[in-house]
Image (cartoon, rainbow, N blue to C red; front, side):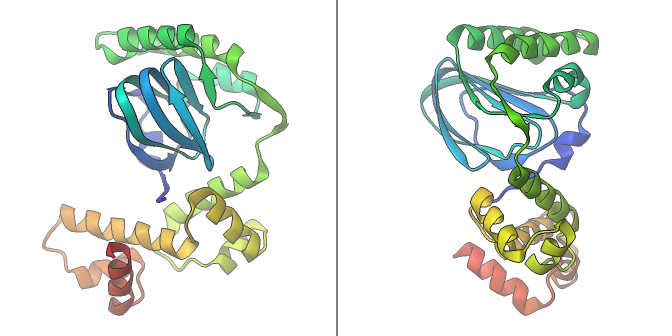
Length: 253
């Protein structure tokens, strides 16, 4: 599982949406709140290492920095994803007061229908200004809020750790990164960091970092095909040509 921080998503201050039949997204996270309503069909989603099977009439609620992904669907689906920037959900976040949301899935056909109607009419369709969209966002969250179950504790410490690790790694993957250095920086043992990393991402630190480096290199080559790969691989964080080809061959096999 290649998890990535959607920093581009957090930089976008507009409500993002996607509607239709297919929703396949690899594991990712962002500061925004993401809500997926499935009116028809079935879908498998993952959130913070747990698997959930959605059916028609269900809503998946992904909180800020939840690590989530959408897998393959079954049957003819009809769904809507809305991703709300912080400025649209300030009142909701204030009421939540940092508490952890226990139930990621809400089973309510009537709520799902209301979500779909409001989202499609006022968010998906063009012509409404930001004040209207902000009001609709607050209304949607007000409808969903009574269905959410909060724990009495603040967010899970391990979840905070993996979120902080991923943010740091995604900002610094071109530099040398090791379990020992990460453990020292965040105040945990290397064994604990390794265990949490595997638990949430189902992969090891070196594999994750190398995937980011390969993605960076491939992206830069697409931007400018005239750039030398020998120069880019060092910019990406590989310490030698041999290490780059070892990683590339391992990923492709």
